[in-house]
Length: 277
Image (cartoon, rainbow, N blue to C red; front, side, top):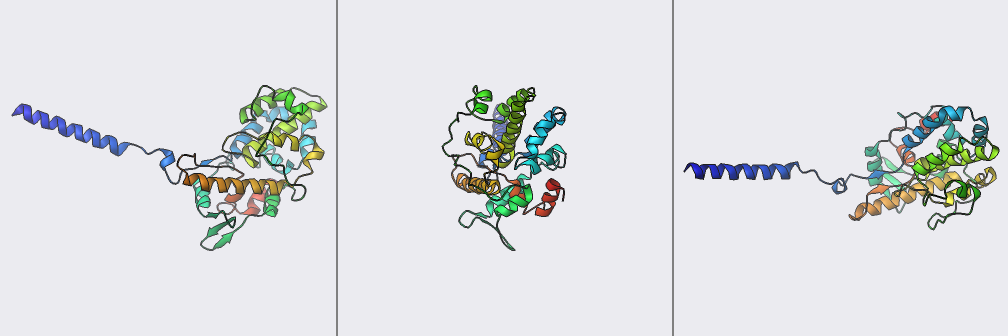
């Protein structure tokens, strides 16, 4: 009888252990209907600027070139610490909610108090980007261009990544020639694209972007506000599709600080931080 009782107790403990294991098993984050990877990473760019800040402060030639680019208002906000790591922390919960109410057909966010739409003029006001010029070239089929700058720094890299840009930037900062100053300018802009304006689920940057920033004159030809907006909308549309496909990683590309304007911070507040208005 004692053996039978021990056998029953052992079975009961086994059942409890099994039940406990099933209860404590955490679901995969992909199984979470609210999970999505946010690729926009302002914090990463802030870290890059912090890492080169002392060297950059002594490179007046680089700062002069940067001030002549269409991206100076945004880059200067990081350099002058108007955008610190605290301001760069994103709210994934707000972004997820916005993705859920985004309508891909109308390109509007449907809220209880009405629809909201982001336009290129809003991007121009927030980031200080030009809202006129040519449309940015397609990045769908992007091949390595035969540019001196690309061959000089990216020959050993198959793709443009955050890490490769940082390594090239560290190398370029040691070149105090006129060419070196322009190289640093290009690399800082590429990092801005990579982390803020044109970030994507592959964590790489299309080679096409190097052709758009090869010279100051070339940079001034494009409608960057519209380009950033179009890329954000493309990222939202892909995110909505991927959430329906269980085999694909739920992620969203593009400059998501723009859609956060509708939630936590007003457009004028962000604009005042960047442009010091």
